[in-house]
Image (cartoon, rainbow, N blue to C red; front, side, top):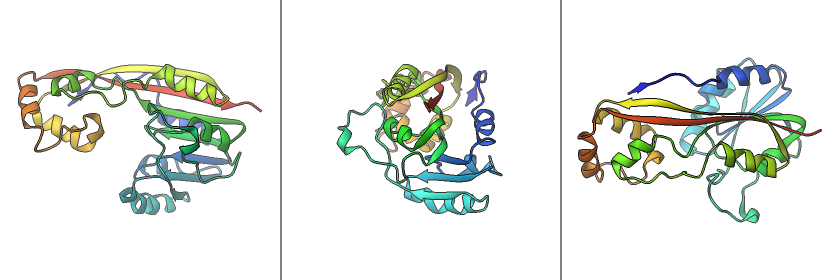
Length: 230
């Protein structure tokens, strides 16, 4: 699996610059905590959330080692999902608890992000766009699960929640799959890319795909920085 030219932003560099000035920072959906821990030492209080139970003990140990705290909480619905506002989960934090919220590839409730940010606080997120690896899904006969999720829809949600978007970027990066093993390795790591295409049910789809290898696709990413008005 080969990736093409890099994006015109670096999430890690952008986050480090914000963390250097943050007194209270929150990482949404930290996963195993590796990326958030890489930003240590922190200038102030550092807190992360994680929703997948298997990740909680791993992330907890890793983040304790760098002086950060972990909270196990309810996941936000997919950002493209139509969910009644009264059923949306709340973040387990008081109003204006943080001056920085970061989010890498995690769904979020924009109104909750706005609520836990103090005036002048920042939200920094990098997201996987809904057209991610469209060509791979086409070859597998699998619909894209988050097709309506893109830079415009993300900015609209944040602005509707009262945040002001100050930086927005979007990128489509070339990816090449050279073998079925590479495809399966990717789908094992990211099963939500093509729901239903999982072993052993995927045999026919993978046989069709094998006739199209090597397959070139495009990874869809976008980046947003937004602030809460004082």
